[in-house]
Image (cartoon, one colour):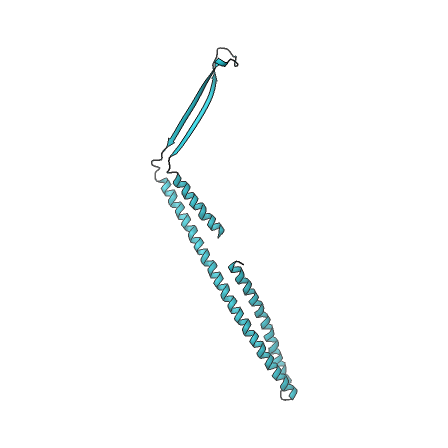
Length: 177
């Protein structure tokens, strides 16, 4: 975004620079010199040196340039419009990334909360199955199956917790924290 803003600033300055070429210009100059003229070669004689001084002022008013400046300004305006479109597109992409990261975070949070409930349910089922086995009503296969489901729920809980932290970091990155 900063590079696009810099490009936009340069485009504005470029347009202003070309528009400034329509303004009249004024230049002044001053020149002084001394020339040696003598029959002999005695350069130390003061009256053998002839001074001369030039003072001038030059004004330039642009009248017609064959529409060159107008075409250059039109080109620079098109470049500036392209930069503005790129900036707008970048803002939309960033907004979409933030929305997507937020949606992923909410989804990961819901999965995490759901898995917490699944662990509670699996723990209750395991406790009931273990109680049935101790009472002699259930089999060891049921206890093993309930224990397996409990471990599976715990593993999914850890995975969902990791996904939640990862999606939270992705959201922070998208919003620029």
